[in-house]
Figure (cartoon, rainbow, N blue to C red):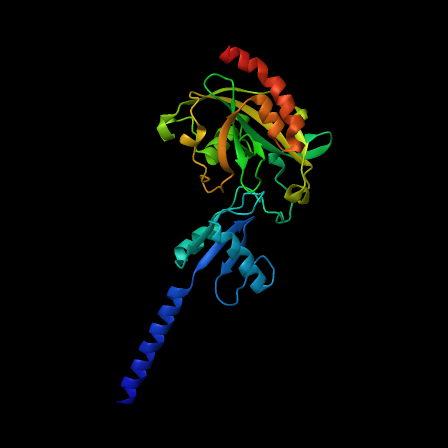
Length: 287
């Protein structure tokens, strides 16, 4: 074989090997406070500053769970692609907040906080969804916390009203929208009222909140009416929508009293105060 032909064949073989290598590579992006770009090879380089191998197995564990993020937090999803365009897009996307256990460092956005007794609390919108008769409210069992039930809730964004944030969280966590055309079985839901903010709705919580310099969360409640008393599992979507991880494993109707008794102990006083303050709204719209 001529020297020129051998050289050409060697180039072709190298190109084929490189192509196969590229096809085997997979990039996953874990958006937690704008950090972590992971290349899945035998040794990885990660912006989270942990050692290469521990970082790889740490983040891959959460990816295998479906891209849902960390328990107790609600991290961003992972993205998988070998496309430069997808890589650039994933880098540019920013999470609404850092909910990882580590907190990612830095101060929590002050526009998303409330001051109670001189302490900073994360503003958290909560949806009280009554059934058609007003006798029960919609509650969910928290993912990874069997036996712990609460109302749909989540952190508020800057300039969001309580009603806007509660409506958004209700959709993200349960798939229930005020637009009945988006709901399973065209279930109709309406916003009835918003409870006046009350410092008694604040409760202490540690974890990533503490690492962000927050004393806990202060709930803000919006009240809805779901025009059915059917089993919620027939019309909810618990997969986690709009890029959010699944929050609940199941949902059901509970009386307000049962709801208060079933909630996490730290939230109980806030729920007890809510039960008192929501009573006039219940009487106005249901009795």
